[in-house]
Length: 79
Image (cartoon, rainbow, N blue to C red; front, top):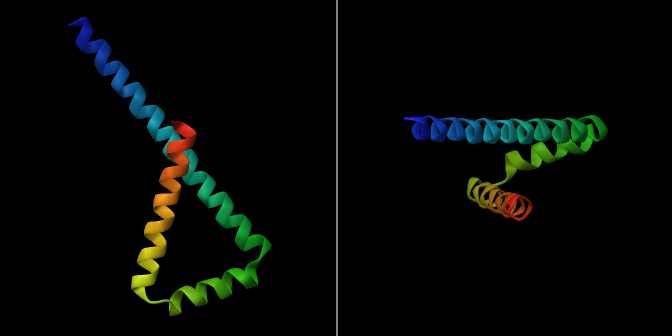
C-alpha cells in the first residue's frame, strides 16, 4: 500500500527530526555547563557544595520548576 508506506516514511522523518532537536538541545546543555565551569570554576564548586547541603525535597521542587520553565520555553518557541 503506497499510502501506508508514505505514512511510515513521514513518521520516520518526524522521528529523525525530533532526535536531531533532542541531540542539539543536549549539546547546548553541555556547551552552557562547560562555559560555566570554564569561566567561573570557583563559583561552580561552591554551587555544587551548596547543592549537596540542600534537602532532597527542595532539590526536587527546583528540578520540577526548572523542567516546567524549560517546557514552557520550548512550547513558546516551537509553537
